Amino acid sequence: MTFLPGLDSEELPGPITGPIVVTGTDTGVGKTIVTAAIAAAATAAGQRVAVLKPAQTGTADGDEPDAVTVARLAEPAMTRTLASFPDPLAPLAAARVAGEDALTAVMAQLAARSIAEEHDVTLIEGAGGLLVPLGEGGWTVLDLAKALDATAVVVARAGLGTLNHTALTLESLARREVPALVVFGAWPADPELVHRTNLHDLDGDLAGAIPDGAGAMAGPLFRREAPHWLDPRLYGRFDPVAFRSHSR
Image (cartoon, rainbow, N blue to C red; front, side, top):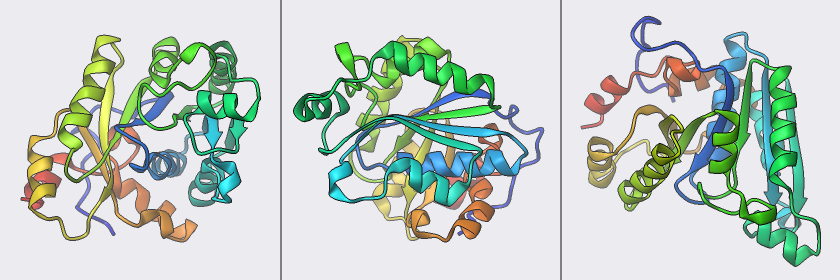
């Protein structure tokens, strides 16, 4: 599942350190697998990596929690989830339905800052899209990214609808002056016309493409391959120019 030859390290700016918020254009776009890929690539590059999930929902469904998935695939130095709720809803709604206290913005910021002090890279995975209410008062992952002076990684779909959703997400980030990169969460092995045209027309700074089905890989294979899916800013060797040329 290696897509393309790598880049020389001088061809793109150096890797990002500090807090990185992983958000998405919608739910189910591949945020957890992208988070795991960045964690694996950064760990392989010698970075001490932490992964923070402020709010996990849907725990009653029996699915593997996102932090467990990341730990299994990437083996970062640390994973932590601040709040978990049983129903598969937006975190603020899930807390209300469960009759539990919602996570406050202050709690999330303090936890993220504390973790970042002890790690080179702190990946913070949101829930759903950029403006989903995560906790008390309706704060969002956009608010958290701004408070932490974080870089955002926007995980986008490859298929129909992604141009509008990606443009809206990037516009919201730009208005709050949060720098952003774009990564495809599940790029098909055999791209169709819609995927190729979306790749050509997509807004934003493309920094990676995760192959569809990567989350089903065994951990050692995932960790070996992850750097091929991300560009040097995310600790990999992915070449977005070559990728676009190859996918025409």
